[in-house]
Image (cartoon, helix red, strand yellow):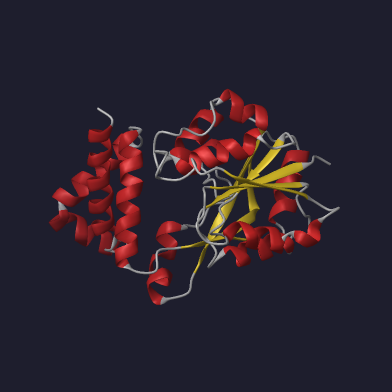
Length: 284
């Protein structure tokens, strides 16, 4: 059985960190090592993490690294920087990555490790929406569409909220790019996919992800996503299609209704495009 290091980054997450820690403690297969990088939290996030995992002595090694440079004040890409610091300090070759804002399914570590044991060098975990209100319920299938069981491994770009890879893949891919706040995991996984064909989609290894709770939060996230995509020149054809859909909205709307598509997609396109343009301008 391959030993694994689970890594994550945190910053001022005292309000929600306990549920993340509890989901790790409830795993059917506890990771062999946990490395968490804190970007210099001003609350008691670090203390809460150490307290939560205090009972794991003998089962799992815990390494909490406080690196104040892994925050927006000092870094363009604090999350990417934090992940790189964590991976650099990981003892084991097999790395599992998730976000502290997620809740990890109880079999996530076990099912991710099973793919490593089958010979995978990259494990594409999956994720589901954690729904707590009507707005999240409405947008859940947009952010977390169903993944067909016969999806080709390289046609699904996993998020770093549910991802596994061997350390040498991370090294050859150049690590997570630290020059942008968003899209860093997309850039990383595209580079990682260039290093190997030994990729397995772990359909049964999933985490629960908190969606935006209202339109204001949705707008902010979409603009930031667009900035990252524009900065790295990602998905040019997709953004062109979104631009055309907006320009031709008198035609787009009835087509979307016929296809039972949700019309909220149009303002989503708009805010992502506005972010994309900003990202292009930031990286001329």
